[in-house]
Image (cartoon, rainbow over the protein chains, first blue to last red):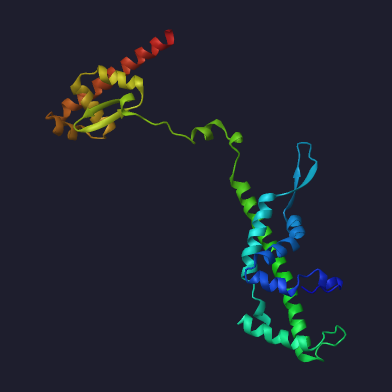
Length: 84
Length: 175
């Protein structure tokens, strides 16, 4: 894997990882999940209010799992060759 | 298809050292491949974010829909709770009468008691009339009686039942 140190590029996954993940490589898929871990956590964070009305942030684990599952199924359908 | 297309480009890349300073479009083959890869990386990134964003939206929508329709058990009224279960009914525990081949179940104990105190003939008329919705003529044909006899016995039976149930009521109240 070649990592370009440029800031914009480093926030993207390496091409090889994408290619491997799309073709079903488990390690690569895990790398993708890891890469989007924080985004998933942010999406799955809900504000709950306790009996005094104080807001609490907490990660909805069920939602997190659902997002991960969805991402995995969609990664496999990603067509790397689409633009070529 | 993927396997054929990619090594070709990889080989051409190996021949040249990729230089980030080369302008796009200048070194066509090399730069195209690199920029294509870059495009794929960007596409993949936005693809993943879109998938996650939309799934999150769907999930929240689903939750909202459920929240509108679901009520916690603890917040149900007694009346609603009662609709959530049925008691099994056993024939042996029920009061029933067999009339003309029909099996008639009487749930009300007081009514069943009053009915059983009637003579067989009178009870038959009451059951046929009020539980099987037959008119007096039909009952008369079934029991070989004239219509008027049926009507008379029916009304007197009802009076008898009423009297008996009222007596029972008074008994209950005096208890």
